[in-house]
Length: 355
Image 1 (tube, rainbow, N blue to C red):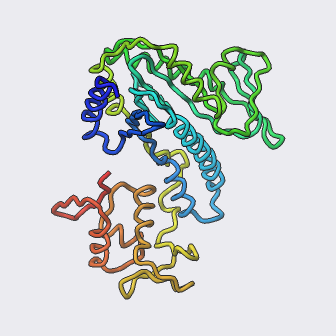
Image 2: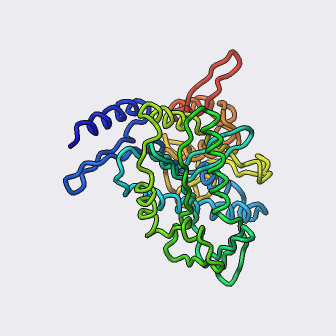
Image 3: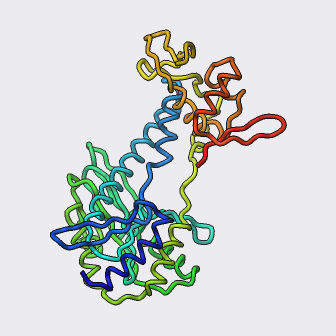
């Protein structure tokens, strides 16, 4: 193996080891060692966690449930498509590619979300993932995409226009942080292999920028072949990767959009077998009087739901009210074993999650 490449690999790995444990992967493929650096790994969406908690805690006939279920289906489909994209980009064997899975940046007063960003010293590539079943028809003249599925037609913004807007925002972000301008390419990844893609106007941009699963790797290889000249020094490249990671701003809670009052949620500890909120603590465990199931840590889910739906801190008294227990001593015991941080004051102790 080329000694220069070994030195480069070791230098990049050393810089990122402390910041990004377990993100640097070395793979041996047909006796050729290649490096893939996933600088930022995709995390499970907070939005799905909140929606799941809402569905657990609202009564089955609550009028907001259909809206929450619809949002969950949309976000889960999007996440599944992004994971499919992650699989294909993991097949890349190009040295010096830094991959950012799910990056949310701010420029001015605007935030923009990039599903996947591939960065090299020669160019950057933004990929937006779409996981939509049915027939997708691109009407470029109107900047619209039409989706036909189960005899229903819906109209969406053209995803090419969306990813081009993200490109412009990333160019501005780089300029704001005094980085040299590098070529920024963009693609739309249609993750569902059963989706039919239609381009009735024969728009060449649609053919060039929209990729079904089998095409994405070859399209990326085209960009790699096109951009050979390194425009970022090793120092600039590493500094940019670190700054992108540091600048990532994960999306916060969307709970407010449903306008659900905290008093509308069911309280108590849910039985993992019959799903009723009837569990009681005695003999050192949680017991369901309805189905006789026992579960020592059944309160962990209730605690998670509280932090997702009610507040980001909890007191002994609030825990007792939410779990339907009476003993302050038991509440303290459960809190102390829940890996929570404790902020003590003269009046009361307040617990919060370490993240």
